[in-house]
Length: 205
Image 1 (spheres, rainbow, N blue to C red):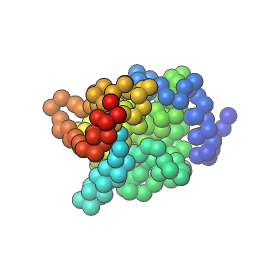
Image 2 (cartoon, rainbow, N blue to C red; image 1 turned 120 degrees about the vertical axis):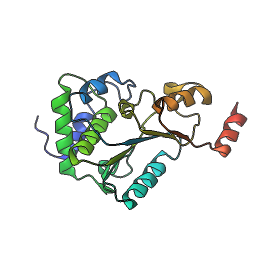
Image 3 (cartoon, helix red, strand yellow; image 1 turned 90 degrees about the vertical axis):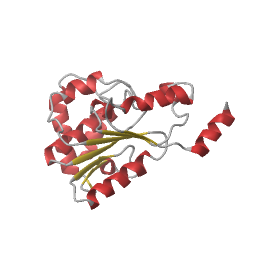
Image 4 (cartoon, rainbow, N blue to C red; image 1 turned 45 degrees about the horizontal axis):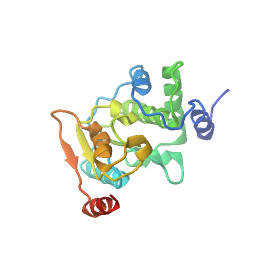
């Protein structure tokens, strides 16, 4: 079936994988290796609360310094275009459609989740447009999240709370290890400690 509009693509990518969440890097990495690789520095932002605002702040810092930026957010509030920003501007429908088509061509018979498909589309757009720095917001967890196929030059974990226990583990320490999976040996890692959230978690034990 022909897919010409962004909405048609979004309906399609929502249906091609049997599960909405299917953590793991094997499928998405295999497809990425058949696509245009990114060559710019990457900052990956994980955590429980504050990921989106931190990503937006970093984007604004680099824009003010004169860099061409790519920023990837999840989820969106009103429309899908909010997830992919080029130089602080939402990606146009036609750009996203081209990116989805590139992913579709590269994936062959590999099944991808909605988030994995969208992540690869964002990375393709960043590579194609030659951004000078990419800031990637983690969707869920960190270690097995699709953005973690990219080795971050700087990794940020803004907070750790007891979210998504069914997927990430039963307690804050286990969840924290999953989120710390975006760290890379020998590269900077920045950690934000939420004192108020920690106190609530302790009280819940």
